[in-house]
Image 1 (cartoon, rainbow, N blue to C red):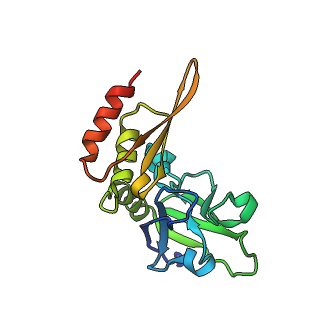
Image 2: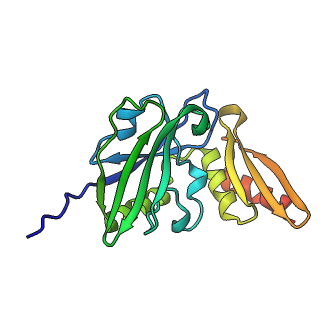
Image 3: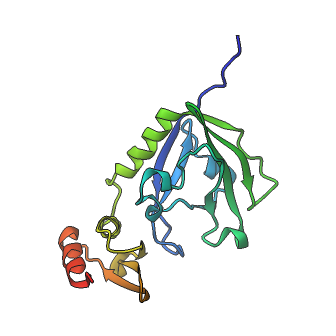
Length: 204
C-alpha cells in the first residue's frame, strides 16, 4: 500500500510591526506544526502578508492555495525584497492537500530552508478563514482600516501611522483619475463612529 505523506498543521498569528518599521500594517506570520519557521530561517525579518492583503475574497488572500502554483513572499527586511531579500515559498493545491514547496531565502542563501510541507486542505482553508475573522488583536487604527475597506468606497486601504499619529490612507480610482486621502484615528472615541463620519463626508 502506498504510504501517504505526513500532514502538517498551519497556524497563523498576527505579527505587529516594530516601532521603527517602514510598514505600519500588522503582518500574518505562519507557524507550521507550532514552529515559527520564519524566525528560524529569517530571524530579523518582518512578515510580508500584511492586513490590507486579506480584505478581499478568499481567492485574493496572499496564502490562498490554487491549483496553479504561486510563488508567495512570506517575509522581508522592512524593505522591497528585490533590494534586500526575504523568504519565499511556492503554494499549490493538489486535491485535498495544500503543498508548500520550493522554499527560497534570498536574505541568506546559506541558511537551510524548511522541507516541503503538506497540509490538509480543509484545515488549511479553515485556518485562513479563522485568521481573517479574528479581530481580537486589532488596535483602533487596524479596526478603522478594516471598516474603511468594508465600506467599498476605496480601491486600496492601509495603515499609515500608529500611536499618537495613527492614521489610515485610502486610494480611490475614478474615471477622472486617482486620488489619495487619509483619516486620523483617535483612541479616545469609538472607531465605528469615526469611520462613519469620515465615509459620509468623503463619499462621492
